[in-house]
Image 1: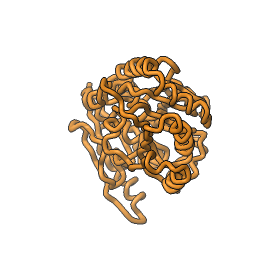
Image 2: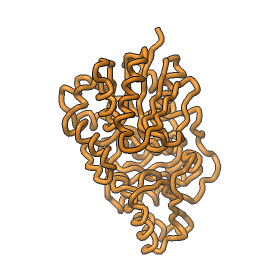
Image 3: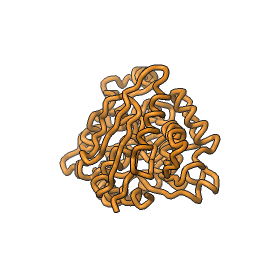
Image 4: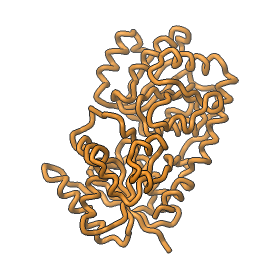
Length: 358
């Protein structure tokens, strides 16, 4: 019997959840499932999907765009033979709940972030999604819920937890570069949205202290967001304009990360960081904060495959950066440990776990 599923996303242009959905849709299709991927917004598709995936993108704009999208989604779901629909992110899950009225499709929803986080800088529509799905408990209307980590699962009611499972993010290992065996560039890299929860201000501050000992190293932070100007001013005040670069989003982030001396994440909130997993999968020495909702501590074990540090701890951040540069044997050891994650999180293996829910 061929399994059939509809995935629903806001876009395939940016965002960690969107990237995961593109990989999952492709992985399920490559395993023989009949996969439809509905993209609700008209943004240019950046994340590629398998040719075996049927992509339906809505191009509606204007004041009534949301109502039109929900109506069209209802029609797609009604006409599809698939009995299972999987939306990501609270606002998309809310739209899907409304679209499912009168249809009775099985809804598998997924919490992709830290449900405790305030996310004050979100667009108003996303705040509405957070309010209804998280605060009002509408995730309880799902037939099943997938969490990335046990910590995220524990936030929700016993009713939701009883109908849930934990599945981590996949890696598209066929496209992910292997471990770089040459001399690493004297460059530290980070990536993410320029927002409070990513806490790049700490990374810039920590790099300033690290740079005093290792002045030949640079820092590159890939991303965009509301705090760009704040970071630019911080860099200027520290006199690091020549050494800290903010080039925007990278079209091929793994290629940018692969040869770097290290990857660093200083987040205060994360589900499971895709760029962290990619860095580990390529054997890049990795430093991450032990932040809610526990994605980092699931995969990073200090001294074995990376370095896990407390949140907001500049001292330990600088010490970890120093250790990777000063101790080549240590850096090599954690690199060799990190690449083992490729097999564990291979796209095919994670897609099988999702298909078992259908």
